Image (cartoon, rainbow, N blue to C red; front, side):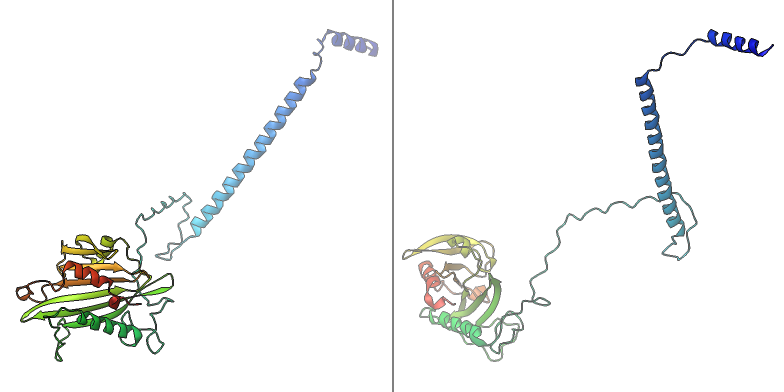
Length: 299
């Protein structure tokens, strides 16, 4: 076969081949886009897998290198993931509030007569102490005729409750104001029978309630049957009968216009109930009026 015959044979074969369909541009673009998307997804998955493997490798190295803190030995190289520690359960109980104390705090006790802070709540000298002594003197002065107030014995022991006592005590600081509590108690005797009277004063700034009976119930935390007694144009609360605590049988309370509060209390017995007074020293109206008495109004 010469060259002319070869070229003729090739032309014949080409004429016999079915031509391909015309090119669809949209189809070609869609195919290309899908191929590109598959390539991007493949790279993203490969990158994520590589990152996971890198993190796992670091964790495995850290686990393998960590020793037992209790024994000081190195890890065994086990790459299995350790169980994560459970989250701690919060304690539902509130944080306890510390009891009031001046130890270790910036707020010292009030100053004494020497200008230095007191050792504790009680004033043992100075103007506060003097006011407590004066309150006791005023209490003794109002004891009705027919009763006497025994003097404190010179040889009295610490365990015995003295016939006369007084105390000036720092109570708290409220809005920058020092609140003081003055308490005076006196034994009243009629022959061989003894009872007791008391006066307690809170200076202005105290947190005690205002309503007459609510105020009266605050005395020493005692509860009782309260009634409101009118003294002039003023309402005064008086507990005429205790319900639980029998330390005193009756007591009254009054809040002065400046906020100071006065309590006056009385009981027929002191010491042995068998040798108590036949009757209370003050009537209920007298007890209410004493709470308002300016002699018991301390500042």
